[in-house]
Length: 129
Image 1 (tube, rainbow, N blue to C red):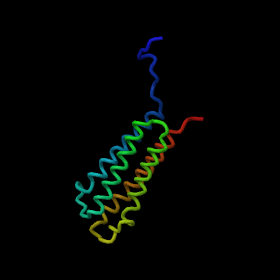
Image 2 (cartoon, rainbow, N blue to C red):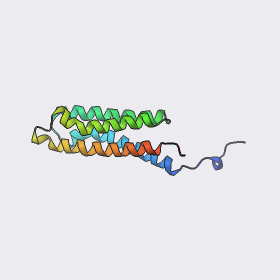
Image 3 (tube, rainbow, N blue to C red):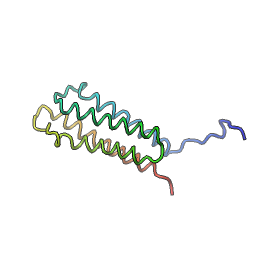
Image 4 (tube, rainbow, N blue to C red):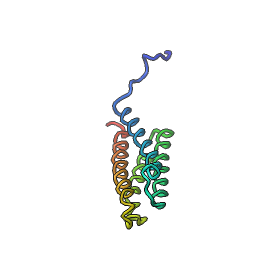
């Protein structure tokens, strides 16, 4: 049997959800790296923390693109980046200065959003049945 476009498998809702999750995580990775420059947050500690989290998110997206199964590793990596974004202000102590509060709220909000998207991505990647 020869290949033809008629025999191609149509994307399922699960496939579309996986693509949407990867797109959202890629955008979050780019944003978390650029946010400190765009928003003008002054803390160099927050800058380096966000660069690390962005790199981790970018790595999660690349892992998922290169190794489609299992998605647990890539979504777990993205989830860990989200946890770090939430915890970093407290761990690194940039909550002490009131000038850093925009960076704190940005990191915490984005961290929770990344954790939610990564959880959805992990659940969507499960095999049916």
